[in-house]
Image (cartoon, rainbow, N blue to C red; front, top):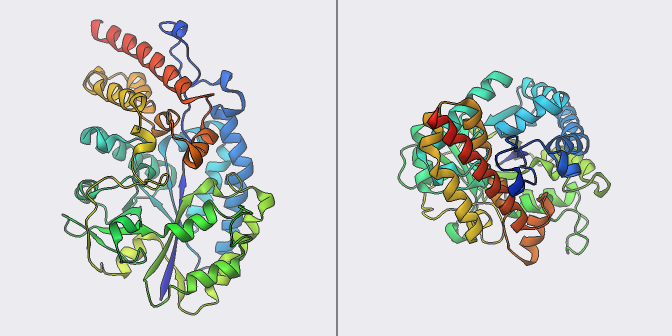
Length: 401
């Protein structure tokens, strides 16, 4: 038997605006984005709402009513939810309607979609608490499963997440760590007592998320029957098929005219034609299946780029410097007890800011350029550091007063 587990990441950052040295000391509103035009926060949310969130939510709502056994899961960054509340309340309402069906699980993550675990346990825990509070407030839901930013994972993270009370954690199912083992089983992270590890089947996930509209792909075009043949082949050699991807896959990364929505509409019906297939959420997988063994992932594993490490965020000196300097301010910021200061500092931790500073080339570099509102990684770095200088002045004034 194979249980199909759909997990979707829903995240959009508060993009910092293009901020010059002449703005330092004069402009403290880092996230108002009039000068970012179509790549500003409000414009991006409104565009993705129209292209992805609203139509995909409707497709999934219809599928749940057509197939009561169909189930899905999400994690929402706190700052994405904030922007929905401000710019697109109809999107938030549509997600709330989906959750009320009872066929949707919500996962926890860091509120600000940050890399805080790798810099400060205290800040990481605080952001997780803030996220839990937001999910309870908006959805009346208490998550049991954790998903870290960009699926960034190692043994130490699993141990801490277990201490926080979670039953499961997500990671990339990469052969480098799996060896000849399959990502289609649950594992136990090294050094924990009971938390279980759910691994992304990245080949099948990426067939949808990245290769679906690639006319140069040897399997193009991909339709639901073909995909289900690949999924059905796993029966007898795995307990679960974890299809993890960004929600923007539907309508934004893969545009409507590629046929992605039709693919999604027909996929559950095709999967259910096999008598051994079913749909489960991550917590249901944890309850249903035993771990088949220990998995030791000591280095940081992510779902990004060909290296599957943190190099998309810390791969050059600009990124390392910016991250180091933002976390150096932690004690002063927290001790200030100034809500605006703390919130701005946390929004500046969002991983996307450092992703925009990435200088990778070739295929990975093309992905980085697509998502960036800046002309170059250097422009992203300059804007960030100018804002950081202004932020230091604000923090210093609070200390003096």
